[in-house]
Length: 337
Ligand code: SF4
Image 1 (cartoon, helix red, strand yellow):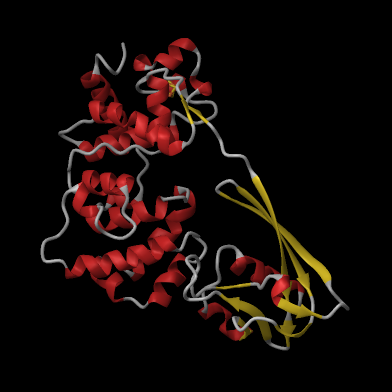
Image 2 (cartoon, rainbow, N blue to C red; image 1 turned 180 degrees about the vertical axis):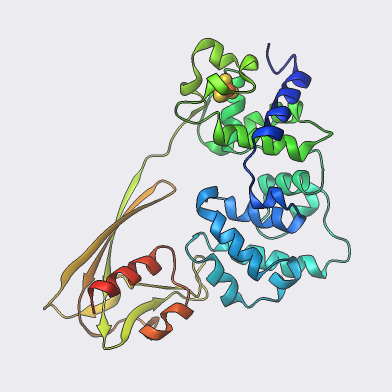
């Protein structure tokens, strides 16, 4: 059997499995348009496990479009702190402001795509899951499932090319009577069963439709060129003056992280040569960049940059520190008292 000749049976097997096995995520147990929108923004580039506590806190503080639209920028960013890719929070905030002002609310995929931060994937997800529109969602999980079901070994230069190539198949097998449930089931299958490494074929609800399983090629598919890893090293400064810490206040005109704070790069300060010592080295990965950041305790003769600020330690909880800087600052304060 294959999905091309048996789409109805495939849909039936998939939806029965999803009804019984799906994870009870908060936007599924208490579904609403607003919750779907928030969950789609938060899960872009963030794992569900990581974003769940953020989702709960967000819904507590901003339970609907109206409350979110009326929230202060600073408050919105504070709730996003730690999730990264802050443009998502800004766009979600802008979207809420526009949404509450619209007399005719967006319904179709095309209408949703007019709103900030909503691209082809997000518009398909929102319009199908929350509004029952027949649009297939294709993300990395769905690409993996489809490539394996079809045993499709075409090579793609990146994820976007693969998404484009599998959209026609995703449209073909879509359950038009229940597009939201079907899309969520496809993504759930990719996230929990058809895993990248070691897919759980023995318990897969659609194994009988899977050509890759038949040929033993599951783990080779899909064939997507992974980007070359770029290594980046950054030296940062840890400078204290009594109960103040020197931080870089990122310019409001910056395209990324505008208005947030971070430990300054060493090159931004006029460090004194004496007493500089390495306090900590941190590694993290962002897309295809592997970043190593070394934090040096030092003293300064002065600020080279107007965007450097002496921030009282008592104010740290009220400002938004970008990415992992909140954790670094908290940990370093414990050893530098
Ligand atoms: Fe994926 Fe295996 Fe199921 Fe095929 S049988 S869809 S490879 S989990």
